Length: 476
Image (cartoon, rainbow, N blue to C red; front, side):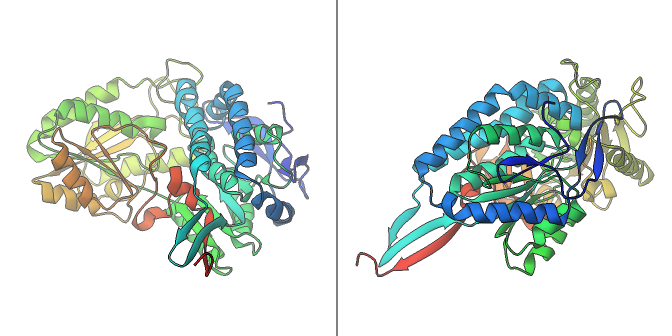
């Protein structure tokens, strides 16, 4: 790392924290510290918010062309440093280097490219009725992001905020902060006016809560657990600021009887284990026809056998460790709960994988004969654990899929697109993938129910950062 990781980026400069308080950054593959950051305080947040508040009027008044120029320079800097960004994420949160390069860093870049596309053609003013409807930047935005997709979540918030003319105070996860510090360098080199983008490291109870409650912040966008999201919303309520949240998930993957069962199961297992299962929209509940149980279990075992756990810096590894000891312990407890509650252990299980005694590695685990009342069917595990549940007919499959407090994503497998669409329409979730459809950065992402509110990505994510003003009596 070339920067001083103990500093924050505030008002266009790297600055020391008000009061020194350090945190070791641990490599989850080695369990050893490899860097240190400073943990900020409410005073650091205050300094960043004042800078963003001062910068807002002038930045909000910049032209679309000016903002396009800054975003283009960020994209260029991002592309130039993509290998460095990928390596930082592998070291801080354990994603295999191939995945960090091809997905973690690249998908983050997509959000800036998408913000450029939307900004270039967005109608900030439209004639309507007897006047015009004008969309204006909401103001100072507090952005609180998680560790599982460190740059993706930063970019999905920062890109539209900057594109719309907002100013930003960012708190990345203190567990995986180094890629965001590199990103701040890229933003600085792009030449944004001082105060437009600010970064303060810190933990949730201190810096996160100071951001959520700050009266001079107009909007807070949070990605993380549902419990933490509730806390953010309560703190934000006192100042009636806008709150956008992308929270937990327990997504169902409905494999309909006419699907290629083996292919669908294998794909579903691998999707559940992507990023070591540390994805909010992972298809962690696989719903299969009851009479195909044995075929499903055999395919799931074969899929797990193909996963290559190992050193995340080895390009051959397809799964690395979980992010931390705390996450490892949580996942182990939930795997044990599946055994204790009587689910059938199809693959994996508790304990460390053979030959990986160091690092927060977990055995990719599949449970069968899971019932809706089990913890592994109800709680977000956030690890490589799949629950296979059986259904008797399509209506029962939909009912099981919707029997959850979450509603982030859903998945449906069937060669009959009209049938798949009918099932997708019935799933209470913000995004449904049919037949392994790929990621699309232009389509909205966000949840129903306790998976959050608001949307990210594309024009929907762009408009989260805009206020709507009606001007009546103009041009009658």
